[in-house]
Image (cartoon, rainbow, N blue to C red; front, side, top):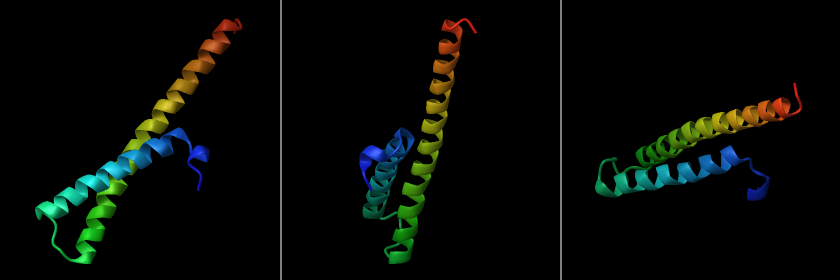
Amino acid sequence: MRLKTLSLPIKIALVFAALGIALTVVGVVRGTVPLNPASIGMALLIGGGSWFLVSWAVATAAVDVERDVAEAEESEQRGG
């Protein structure tokens, strides 16, 4: 998988997922998660997955709005 071929919302989501996983690891180290593999794995999945999903949705909406605004401005300049 090449990073250049990924869309901007996916790149943003991957950054925030990594941040969510890092924060989850901090939580595991501080003792807020039981120290068994299933609990740690679920915490990492929930932490990284939720940050990924929310940031992807927000970034996708922002990109769509910017695209719509650019199209409207272009249409307005053409006299339409």
